[in-house]
Amino acid sequence: MPDLVPPGFSGLPDFRVWHPGEWILLGMLRYTARDGRVFDVRTGYITDFASIPAPMRAVWAVNDETRLPAVVHDWCYSTQCIARAEADSLLLEMMERAGSGLAKRNAYYAGVRAGGWTHWNKRTDMGGLLPDYDFSPGWAMPLGWQADLSAVSVG
Image (tube, rainbow, N blue to C red; front, side, top):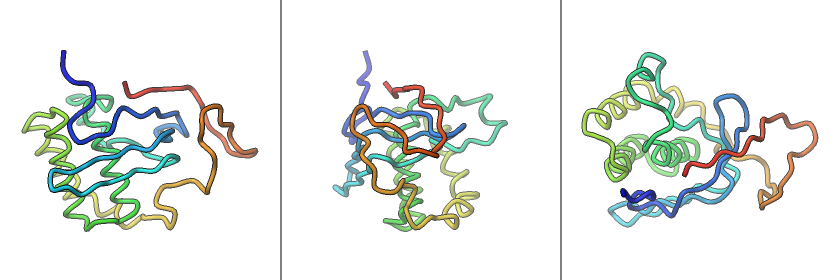
């Protein structure tokens, strides 16, 4: 049986649907890169996982081994904690460690290099985070916030 937690990742965090196509991270996700750098994606981060163009969804699922690498990559884009080229190279590394094949890794990398600049330039001041809020177990949405809160786990 394959290891469920890819090398470098801290575990399999829980997510909930935030809006159609968006998910909220309910616990911190940590990735330790091969070079020793540590990337902590904070609780409350909102991600769309991998932004795969519709034609590619027929070839590759969006609910697969790329989910955790996609979250860390989105975090790097949102916070711009490293240069864009470094974030894209990190995606390659994470996908390899998560078990993605060479063709898939190369296609994702080509995609983020060609079109990632649009998301890079949309960076928000909050870096994809909601305002300070307690996301501990049993949390409830603040009044006025809309979401489908069906519990969904990566694992």
